[in-house]
Length: 208
Image 1 (cartoon, one colour):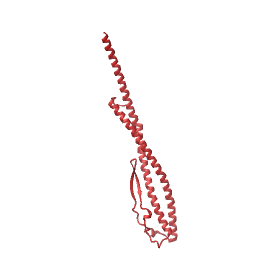
Image 2 (cartoon, rainbow, N blue to C red):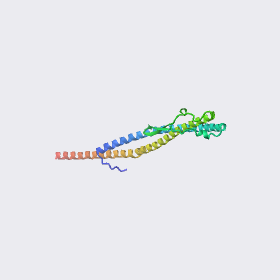
Image 3 (tube, rainbow, N blue to C red):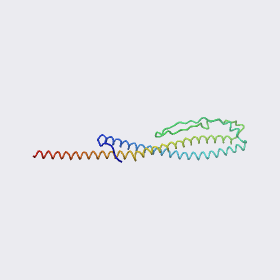
Image 4 (cartoon, rainbow, N blue to C red):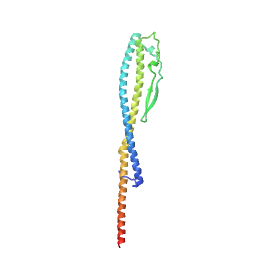
């Protein structure tokens, strides 16, 4: 890599400052990347646990619905009494500058049973509660999976910037500092030699 910088003390100070900033930037990006990776790995484990809970709860919900259909007849008319749920809310928190969603939804305990109790039984109630539990878990899973996606994207971008500093900018500034330092040292040696020659010439003239 050829260095085009003029070898002056001012440029040497500027190059050293840029080198120090690049190294500091790389350390900060590397620290940020490690924090984001730890956050993402924790969420991935949480996502797996939630998915398992969803699978189990779905199985229990459908089993309860099947029993309700058997004991009450087909419950399609009863299902129409369940109102549309608009309680979903999304907020955000910041993790090292990455906006992570926080999804909240109305708790099942806050919801009234929408159908008449005289025409239903405990299996219908169980199915209703289990499907509401699935809804809660699905919202939680959506939050976690979206967070993992955002973190993975941020990690990729952070790694790219860190690599650019480590493999391009830092070596370039190091080479510039070395080039200017060597050039200035060479100039000082030449100046020193020139002064010695002048001194000898003056001494010869003084002896003549």
